[in-house]
Image (cartoon, rainbow, N blue to C red; front, side):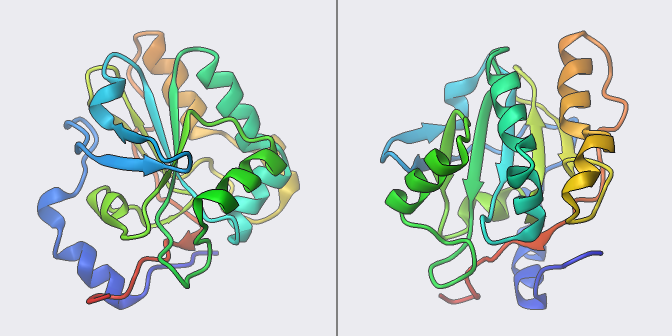
Length: 203
């Protein structure tokens, strides 16, 4: 089952094709503020692998990953290995998934999530820079700042928690292969989930 972006949002992203990301090319630079009020730049993480995880706590596809504990497990596993894991929330005010900094902090505590930072992107600037389409939509950037993975978290595009156990996790595969000096077997896949709840054009 696929849930796509509204046509209007698609038009906004189409207009930004000059900034579209491509695997094998440098990941677009950005600056964003996290739910603690701290500013982060992609350049701050140079020399590290970086995971970008697009998030919407109201989306059942995201809930599958968090209620099963899978996303938290991945965050803890890979940050322990030196990976910077950035959860990005691009939901606009009034849209599903929008949270205040306090609400985001409460959610992270409740879910025992462990990202490096939760970046709040209510204008959608970072999301559109990366052409993030769904929640979740995952990106992996290598220590040289090159995008090495763009797509789904795994190969089970369902909301069934039981599917997590048998899924092939593309993010873990990409990180494991890249850290071992191997090419990423699946560098691109089709992201699945809820459409990112961007602000309507002109807002």
